[in-house]
Length: 277
Image 1: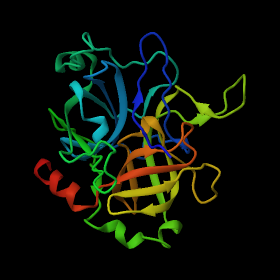
Image 2: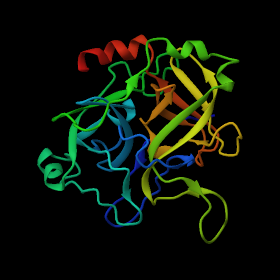
Image 3: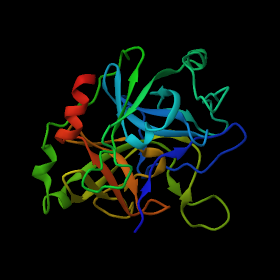
């Protein structure tokens, strides 16, 4: 079964492109103020994408490598819980999509920005044993008034391997809209573009490897509230107050199956992060 990276196209000025996020769950409000949304331009296709990220120091956000590799310009950062209830999106459009956002553009629009960096050993979803789908955004100026999240200690998730894992409930946070039934037409749940807000849900564990945590993502599972989808890439997985993983991939277009999350409690990630923190 093919894996699907979970970055999402953001909204253009002319209309809404499909962009999904938490399936199930509910609006986050101010439960997770250190979880932000990032937006950036891709250097290859010149399109704008969005992901989620978490503040782990006053100047560093952690996210997915596929949200930081091959980007153009600087990356927009916002910690607003509600971006837009309905169109249009307030996110600025780069004057030159080929070069991406500039600090001057984002300062004029009132947004924070930073420099994206992908893990140097990110395999691009080609090496299951060395996934390393983790990246950071280093801010030009420190964030004040928001308490950074706490990374899990090295090896923290090892104690939750099966069968304990299947009884463990994780908390997921990310930006975008839920997969839900439309107001008219075929009543099959599908990705919706608005509202563009921070949401959270819960999900039980399914599988643990040295690199990856997989969670059940079905909102009908009575052990949890749902899962993650495209707009949640790079968003956090929390357990017992620790940030243990970031959203990496899914298996289906409607995001109601398994979700894959890059562990951040492993040496290859934390050794790389240390000089930035």
